[in-house]
Amino acid sequence: MAQLPEIMHRAFFRTVSLLSPRGQGEVLRRYFDWWHRSPDPWRLGTDGYERHKYEATLGQVPARAYRRILEVGCSEGVFTGLLASAHPQADIMAIDISHRALLRARDRTRGAAARTALVQADLVTLATGRDFDLVFCAETLYYVGRPDRLRRASERLTGVLAPGGVLVMVHPWPEAERLHRFVEDDGAMSRIAHHVHDTSPRPFSVAVYQHHPGAAA
Ligand SMILES: C[S@@+](CC[C@H](N)C(=O)[O-])C[C@H]1O[C@@H](n2cnc3c(N)ncnc32)[C@H](O)[C@@H]1O
Image 1 (cartoon, rainbow, N blue to C red):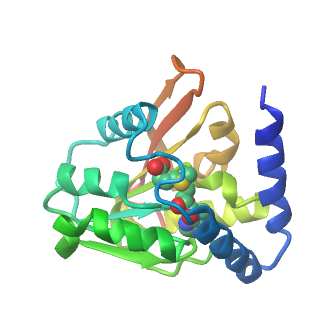
Image 2: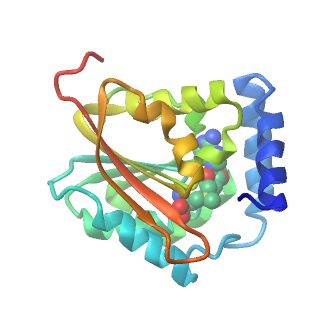
């Protein structure tokens, strides 16, 4: 059962999502710039649980030579750096709504900079075509709020996939069932792997979906 801080956290972001998409994006940008006022606020670079989650995530990715990879909500680029090492042939675009987070991500991914573009963008209003054959979205969808925004964000995640592309989503379990439901119900997507890691006090789910090569855009 969800704890009170988590219930209040989700209620706060649902309230923000009563604004227009543009207004919501502006509040979130300010909020996450403030949240990143000191380095690595979630200890993504040092916490063993986060490292375990990253390894579990990379371990679920179907082995292929990916050409273009998108990471949504990259924060300070910890996972981005691992991605660049795991897929040295790929061009990576990592987006975050926080400019301050991206400045630190730039430092962290400097070695891979030639292939890694760090872009300030809001998932909810993200405007790119079907350019990516691998997309990651971890620990981000609970910020988008109301179901209509979650639907919109989910449509952006599936809408940037090239035909046959793979989408990997990682969120707390069992909340992931709610957060992933629009992708789950998308007729153009098939779930090809799903692993619930429930041995820690903070269980999480890694869900992998593939866009049907023949599905209409
Ligand atoms: C909890 S961190 C997760 C970082 C990383 N994905 C991971 O799992 O280690 C969430 C990140 O999502 C970003 N974020 C939140 N809402 C966003 C949105 N609508 N569009 C893009 N980034 C967003 C925040 O700025 C923050 O850096």
